[in-house]
Length: 245
Image (cartoon, rainbow, N blue to C red; front, side, top):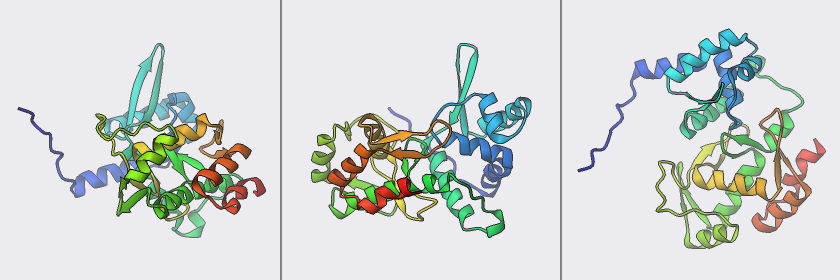
């Protein structure tokens, strides 16, 4: 007999505890750095947070204990990453709330245009490009979105198979096959789940997008402009914005 584990419902104490973990600026910067999907060392995260390695280690211990960050050891190094896609989605939503806050608290910079155009959100795409892809797939009824959940239609299964995506619905995975994530810069939904992750991976393999070395931003290549326009029908003006910026 299989016994299912049921998570305890959230209450004010657990919610405030998670909020306190995220509420520290250094820990928030650590989580922001990990939103790129890469596993980073404590030293790298210390640099991102603007604190000493010793201070960063203390913050990381709290984030690991709170279930927001996981750690794995390889040789002499310990690498940290977000504990799950759910953490990334929650942080993306919080970023959207922060972006609508008082203007004096908003940060701007030269990377804003690139980040808004296309970026990683943990292991899937976000920004104008991701929202445009989601809209295109939905309008062609390749996917059906209801609230935060998504369904891949029979036409969609054929389409994604043609792209070389392995989206076996019977595959054992705790990750939803198709769901949406609220985009902080566009205030609209982009694709997450296994489908969103597979689309990003395939786009990188096809050299349609190139990840930045020190940023979450994604560069849309010339080949990507053609690919996204031909396969998804993305308007050329959406794809050209990054180059103009």
